[in-house]
Image (cartoon, rainbow, N blue to C red; front, side, top):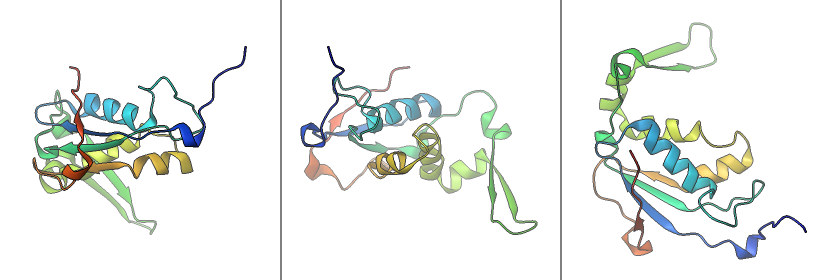
Length: 144
């Protein structure tokens, strides 16, 4: 008996919308990464992009538990000497909440061209509105 491997022609992509209001960032990111990778489907194949499109709304209302808002630090290095920049997540969440959500999800995807293709199917919006109503996205509930 051979292992089933999906073919690119067999992959169908669905659109899902996730409401991030009041949800912990890590739980939201794991659900979104699972949908983007396609691990929720029975045809999941590790070397193919079998995932779906994910829209996340209300990114500014996502919750960081514990003291992460004060203790968690986003670090960016420009590549130049002395070019390291630090930013506390409380400031980052006020300034760019979409980026914080995208960064959490990107870290859970493969670090190769397949992961970059999966990440392109993610859309994150600060508020409750999104321009993808034409795709008729289904609502996905985050557990927890």
